Amino acid sequence: MRQLISLILAGGWIAALSGCGPRVNSNAAHTSEAWNQVNDPALIGVREQNLRALPTSGQVSADKMPWRGYWWPTSHGGISSRWRFEGQGASYKNFLYPLLSPTAAAQLSVAQLAGLSPSEKYDLYTGRTDFPLTTALRNATLHDVVNDQIPTWHGICHGWAAAATSEEAPGPQATVRLPDGRNLIFYAVDLQALMSQAYSDFSRFQYRMVGARCDEAHLARDQFGRPQNDSCRDVNPATFHLALAAFIGQQHKPFIADMSRDEPVWNYPVVGYSEQFSNYRQISTADALFQVRAPGTVRLIDVETTVQALAGASPSAVPAVTQTIPMKFRYSLELDSQDRIIGGEWLTDAHPDFMWQVLGPPSDLRKTAPLYSYVKGLVELSRRNVPAPAQTLPGTNGIPADGSLAAYAVLRLCNTVTWRYLLDFAHISQQSAWRIGWYRVGPDDVPATADDKNFTRMADLIPLVQHRELQQLVDFAMRNGWANQ
Image (cartoon, rainbow, N blue to C red; front, side, top):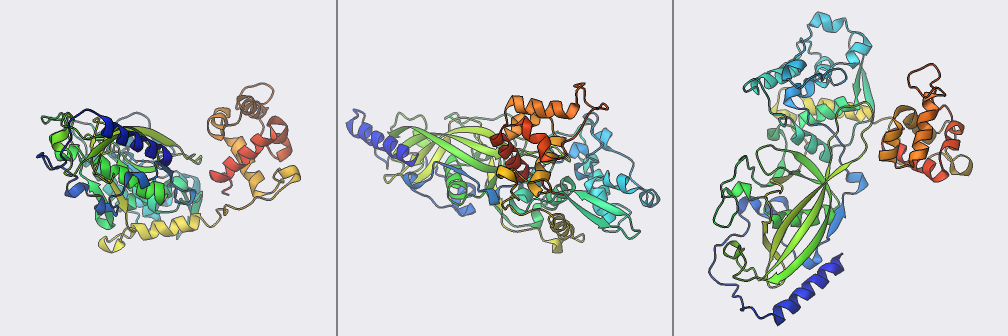
């Protein structure tokens, strides 16, 4: 792909040298508009670089891949949502359950405790039967109501994105014992929620950011057709381009971006990208944006970049499969005489608003309640039984032996999900997915009847799939948490 850039640039040189247009003076008078102070790539540790030297595609490495989580909308009560049972209707009122009294909390069974919200579990774990975190979240929900509604995008997507790019994924569950002897179970989703909450307060951790938020639904335009408000033109596309190359292309680590240019804020971890280049050319006074090109611009090149943003995942007891959302952005880059990137302009209104990275974990010293420290300990507890990514115990002909971790994982997967899930995410054939589904529902082909059955040994599964598909299923199950006890 880097070779393709060289070919495009070489072709541009030929066009520039053989064209009949007027010579352009790069020092001609025009508005000085390189990236401004809030868009300087140095703010996030990125320096200007030669276009030819930059990788044109990249992917976050497996060991740095963030985990999928949820934005915990304010209209649902944030992390005070009892995610296993709540959710009927869109109104925030459906999530305003009566808060537990100390007496009522003391009478809950282990199963009932397991069904509480992440914040209720945290309050009980820290010995607070007055439920201060849950109460604070309830008050935040009520405070956000305007005209009996709460915007659906209000939530803690920034907390999820920050936590997911900074912290290890929780294991399947952490079980702690309350002072009265009852077990309190924190599921992976509960721990994700609490860690996201810990990262939701920007005053508690260090980060670096480039770009500014645009909160205008209707844009006023300047004479060049661009938004008048500087914050609605950033993040500068040159800064965006350089960050993709530096962080993902070279370091293979994620960063976070608000992918919505207008008022709603949707923070996503960015985990991959690929670029296509066209129309490498010498700058000309005929360029509609000539007057606002960065000082020193000699040449321009157009770019279409496809970014892979990590998709969020609704709360579920089933492990979320890694899934990305492709987003396309078009822009032109401004190059100096050495083809160094010195600026850029968006070619459409659809572009990221700002970008940022977390520099360190939250500090509990600024708060009276040490949320992060408690949750960190719970996450570490949940991961103690998570298997290391190592070779699985082999069975006959490479098939996992019954009793091995790999066999447990693949049988658990096939006993839990639908045939459509196996087709869409494990990518086995439709025929094999159907066979697995038919085996589970039994001869009457009706689920939840007396003849339903589960896979109990590898011999049950082997005849239903091809050998390579069995390997796919094993690999998929091990990668996506189905081996977690």
